[in-house]
Image 1 (cartoon, rainbow, N blue to C red):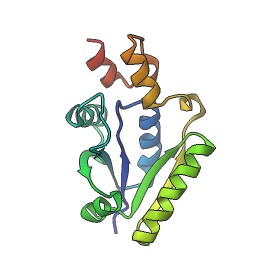
Image 2: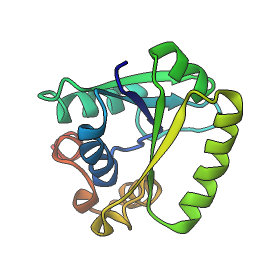
Image 3: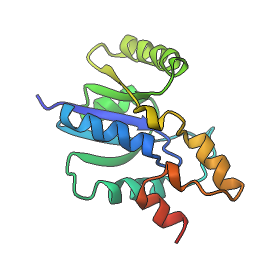
Length: 156
């Protein structure tokens, strides 16, 4: 059985923190789907297509990573792509408390899908898409928080 995982999120925009989690998860899985969740309640700054393109550019030489979009329950999308793992990044204890609640609900819905938590590198602890969006909205330079593919798009 292949070790397939889904790394779900909004990734609005893709940050160095997201890349850190994916890069460190690469040895653990045969395939990592970066699942850009489409949520009607959220109003993203960047289109889903743009976010997918960033991941495609960043991982153009890594066949184990594929970016996709999905709607609905994460657990249902896992079944669709035969993923038995959900990957989540943790920066703070508060992240863990929130993520554990979701993992518990997912386990109740399907016990065959396990959530794996990776803690972020300390240097990326302050990197959050919400903060990056605020910097961008206010004309600041968010480059220290972003991968080169995103920088190239935003500041070219």
